[in-house]
Image (cartoon, rainbow, N blue to C red; front, side, top):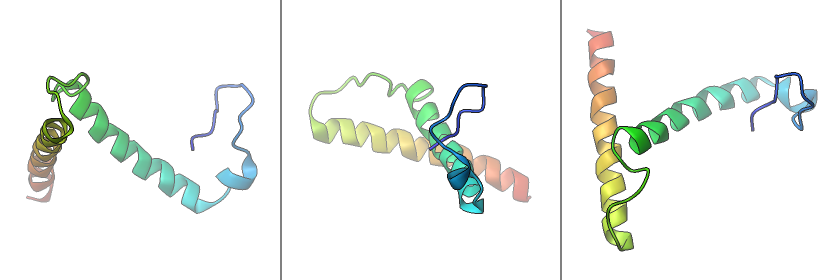
Length: 80
């Protein structure tokens, strides 16, 4: 749950945002959203080209594996 900080009233108040776990949750959420965003835009999964659950699941899994390989290459470059 993200807090609205743009001057409007937010449903997320200080009781939630004061904990360190809230900041950790936002960091992890950003990492997950980046993966789904990449899968939708770069891998073309914003609108599926397949019919049937098995084929759609296969296409998404294939796209997620491709994202993992791209991310892995960047992680290896940083570690080297």
